[in-house]
Image (cartoon, rainbow, N blue to C red; front, side, top):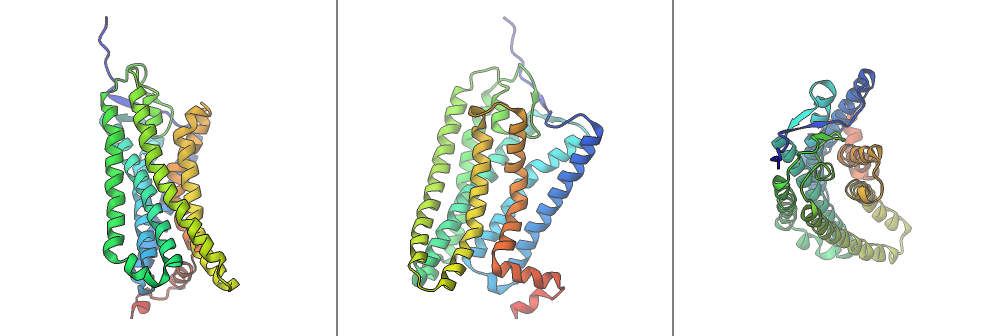
Length: 312
């Protein structure tokens, strides 16, 4: 019986071989990446330089923007490289990319939960808001999100090191994501899939439950308000977060559980692009358009008014 030799590198075969299509895709993804970096950096700068935005809500938003920069940077530079030069990626680089996709993705799940709880505390417990969402607690929520994301990443990435890839080393996608890797393994992946399913459902289920319960109490409180203007303003502060949650959860669910729904490579690529590239671009746009305070400060920034004057 011949020994099985595991692949030492993978080929990311996610896009067309047509040179004109590759040029178009390179320019498109380059523009998306540049816009993602610029949009999230603007959010970070606006929050940092304006004292009116030094509140728990914007503290979490600034970390979400930083996380989106990291999330996008895990995949897009590799995509650009594969479109203009080599499509190969070493075995350990591929595993590392999988790890960081899990890390940034899971951390964002918990951060979105923290943001939902913040809105609950602000609207349902206004008199105790400053005591509940103090600096230490907010920092603990962010630190805990990263810690849980790290544990989740290790739990799903380390078992991949035990797999042997001897059938093929061609990944029919543009990045090394869990579904693409386990599909190539010539060894049994049952334990990997079970571990992923249990961890993903535990993490996603707990986070989603926190978000749902927070907004059930929040909506009940808002509906009891007598002022229509107060209701409108309150819903406005929550709508941006709800849009981001729906966008993120639907795209990630389709990406990681689509194999049981459809086996289309095109669908996998579309879900992957939406989950790992487009979401990080859309988040700052959504918050800029739906959050009045951020919108006003950005307008002043575009008019070349010094932001530091608002900190005086």
